[in-house]
Image 1: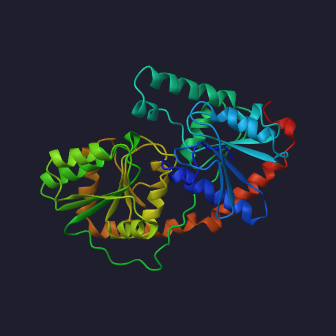
Image 2 (image 1 turned 30 degrees about the vertical axis):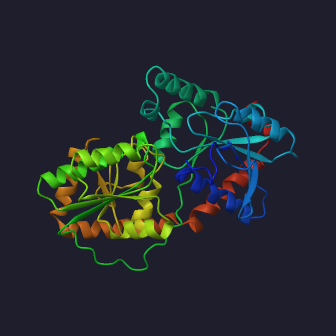
Image 3 (image 1 turned 90 degrees about the vertical axis):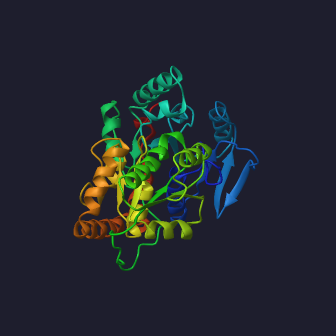
Length: 367
């Protein structure tokens, strides 16, 4: 598998967690797998993590050449997974074997979160051009939103395999009254595209409207200082707590204690932490963007705000807080749905499909 980041990369996130799960699923079936990724500061060129072989080479702009050079020195692979995060590896044209493309989302507006115009426009153009270039390559995605978007770009074959979770599902749903202080949590890398500043604004609006509220921000990233400044300047330090990066057990505990997970990202491939929160008995309140409208079923397992604004999300939250009975129903339905995303259910489907791809005639793939 070709992916810019590996599990040890400081910028690794949900995409790397699910990618590792898929590769370990293949390892369990007796297959030999290798993860090729970019170098990062202080990393080893090769290491093994729990039996999973990680090879690193090159950086931004050079790792495609490094991967091509490394692959050509290895015994022939049966399948190469070309994972795109906005920019491809162009593997179908040099890997000399079968290839599938794995993407989590079409970045689209995310380019504008990281790059000014005209770089953002160039990024969006090349992403669209790439998908058309790969139109004959089988695609593998994690949500219906992404599947439909890829099909609209002319790709012929797009397979949907939902994401799985490792989070321990509560054996029984605990009582959680929504009356009193409203407890909110964000679990996210603190990056521009995640718009955590919108979640902080939700807490500010609720507080100013007389609602007792607490917000815990779990995660770290390049926007941490700006977000802390936002909280300080708005005098929200008494209601907003930055927990930093937490271990799985501590993160799961924060999810369990909250009334809602807030997710205000520009867009997602799925929104893995939505299902993780559901597994801990907590529904999500999210923006109406691709990925999040897939992981959250509006009015059934959580809330999808009508607009991508903090004010819209606040309205949805206040309406549900005024209806404790409906909140209890949403909690239960979210918790029950999370059971369908256990890895033991998802991995057989994904591994069956990948094995099928590894047996395809090579003539059906792009050259």
